[in-house]
Image (cartoon, rainbow, N blue to C red):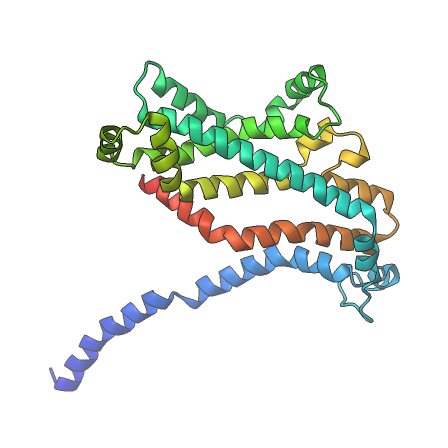
Length: 290
């Protein structure tokens, strides 16, 4: 066998490894098609807000010609959009605070305390992941109605906290379990109580998990539609997803303005998720490792 042939044989595996590193063109093509399918409806909604109703009727898939910003200005200068933004923000932040505070307390007890029934309690929270809100919406509505919380943001906040706790506990327990026992023993020797150890050590060390659960709770609350639909009947208490549906019904003949309202309602959640997506992935990775 000649030296040229040997060199060809030896170089072949290198080309193979390089191809494996960058992947096949078919993989990139499929990924681009998937991205296009996901982004196409969003682009259509956003661009539709810059068009008039006559443009949408004559060319549904066309580009704005000319570009009109009046639809967006009408939505932004109206009071309905900002009222619903405020309601969604109140519900979202209140839900997030309740989920983080209660979830961290429960997770600390399940992760660090030895008591009878601990495994059963943890299993109960794990089972909560398989119990969707849609199954419990009718008895939940009756309960909220009996408590006098209909047409009240608290009637949305409290159930959302309850249904978000299972996910929060499942994520936070591994974080708290990963804190070395020796650290707690050293703190006890220094005279630190269990409560002091919780505030001084557990909370700072659990920040990645706390941030992850907080972001997930906020996004889920912001996008929640079914629960506010049952609980809130007064338009002054509508959250943004419920407001989009009401606005679409009210301006059903003005398609361009409905598209403008819908695209503006998507922006806060998209920005929030884009800013914190790395936190979500990092927190979930830490939970799996724990």
